[in-house]
Length: 203
Image 1 (spheres, rainbow, N blue to C red):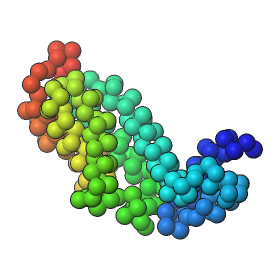
Image 2: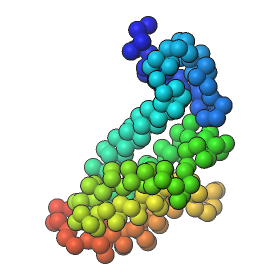
Image 3: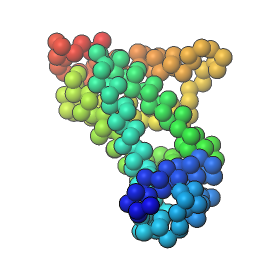
Image 4: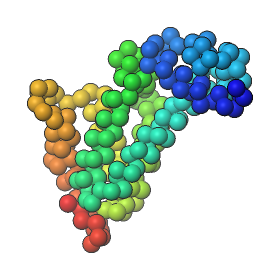
């Protein structure tokens, strides 16, 4: 198989290894064996070794995550639908991702930087940068930046430490998100709004 055509299989193999063993225990030998190629081939594809491979895989996953959320956000008729749908889908994907689920349980530090770290700042900045222009239907640039920061920080909080709700209750997580949006986020964003286009009602 040509080297270029192995790029995707090696990334897929890396994801499967992470699902089984996590970051610390996954080696390039594991990835090569899973992908059906040599360790040298993996190095040629990713000259930086394991760090380079994981960096590219993470970048790809983030891009796919934002792309999947984007279509949902574009369909929202008002800010409540925008926030509820976006946060629910983000949490569904974050909690349902096999590799992330394993890492959050066994190696949380590998995917969840310390809240005060530079790495966490990069995560927040990237997510805020994605969300900010999508709030400009309801807010000016300054208000959209503030609102995006609030939404990102609260979503990360809910993803890492889910709210305490009765687990037996049907739709308990959806209810928690709905309450977050309707009781806290939507009213706060309404207060931030300086202009409200007639074609995009805020609520």
